[in-house]
Each structure stands twice: as C-alpha cells, then as structure tokens.
Length: 107
Image (tube, rainbow, N blue to C red; front, top):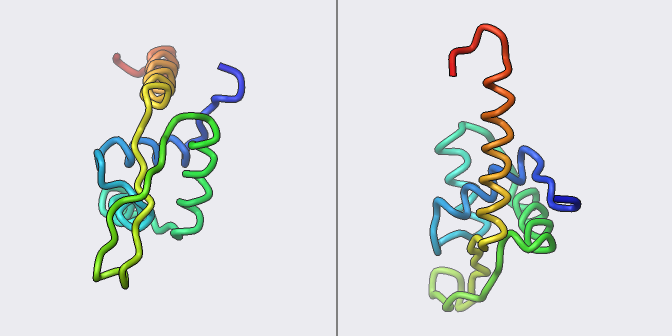
C-alpha cells in the first residue's frame, strides 16, 4: 500500500470521521478527540490531516448547509471512503499481528 501509510494522528482522525458518521468537521473532530482521548489538538492540525487523508482518497469532503450559528456560512463535512475503511482495517490487522508477537502478551 505505497503512499497510503497512516500515521498515528491520521489514523485517529480517520477513526473520528468514521465515528462521527456524517457530522465530521474540524470542530466536531476536535471535540471528539478531546473527549475520547484527553488529548489537546488544534483545529489547524486537524485540517492539515484531513487534507492529507483526502489526497490519499481516505475521506471525501462536501459542503453542508449554512447555519445561523455560523453567520450563514456552510461547514465542510467529511466522510470516510471505502479505501479509508480498508486502510483502517489494514492498520488494525498489522497492529494486532505485532501485538501477538510480543513476548508475555496473551492474545
């Protein structure tokens, strides 16, 4: 899978896009990361990862409806693609395989 390697942060962002299932945008991803991991990240870091994931074909973006809360502006929403799901499965399988090789760890 050349060019499709997932870094740890990209994997986490891709998982959050999948978890948010249709409501994934910069701020919602940021809140989910903080809630689920206790990790503090910036929205610009999230957007950078989303752009990389989109270039790899792992997410697709589309413009959602405008809202009064955003001053009439629309959100850029993200959804996971089938290639994105396959990349997550590959990462999970590889990680599981390596954990099973770890001495003293019961699978």
